[in-house]
Amino acid sequence: MLRSLLSILGVYRIYEKWLWHQVKNNPTPEHIGIILDGNRRWALNRSLDPNIGHYYGADKTEEMLRWCLDLGVRSVTLYVFSTENFNRPREEVEELMQLFEERLKKIMEDDDIHKHKVRIKAIGRLNLLPKRLQKIIREIEKATKDYDKHFLNFAIAYGGRAEIIDAAKKIAAKVLNGELSVEDINEKTFEKNLYTSHLPKQDPDLIIRTSGEERLSGFLLYQSAYSELCFIDVYWPEFRRIDLLRAIRTYQKRKRRFGR
Image (cartoon, rainbow, N blue to C red; front, top):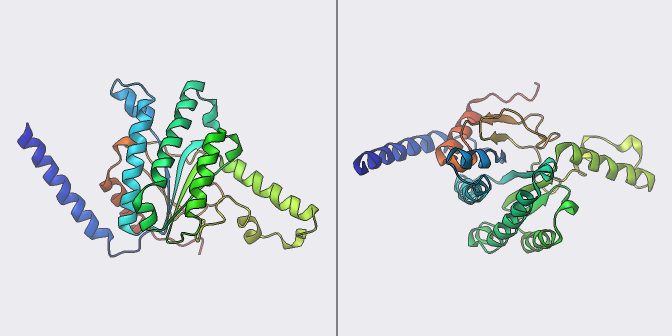
């Protein structure tokens, strides 16, 4: 049994190295968006409490962020909690909020975040979150606000339609206050009022969704107009480095014409 396991691990390492050589000399996506899906189903398949899946998913997220740093990906946006997720059972929502608190504190103390100058920002209707979590978010954003080498965004209490509505409200308020004329509203004006306006590149080059579901579920609806989409048939806690490398290889093989 042990010999068989070691053999499988050996093949996995060879395959991973082969994939790495395939992608390393081609353009890497500057901005990757990831829909972290399948935590509860992964746990249920193992006869575990569904909420336990979120903790395994959080561990995988930390691991994946290191892979992205190794690959030189500049911006990563993670869809971790939607506005619709508030409709889940109260106990699950409360446990998730506690998990977000714990992991954000851990990330704030992570040496790699400061070594690689990673700016961290939460995007969404943050006023819907518990006050304690809002406070932690403000602290981590303040601690990393001057970093500009990499960008890590947590889409939390986020909805793509909500983002578009909020941007429209900001623009309408500026028009009412005389700061902006209707004639001056264009794509650039709109993009400056999106949650992602702080990013050097707002539009993700590549969006990955795990668990086999093939939809965006409201993730970055405005920004994803020309994103390459990659749907992976593994639950988020099972996501491996080879899955990330294969998604990047798929992105590299596609011809991006942007309507031209």
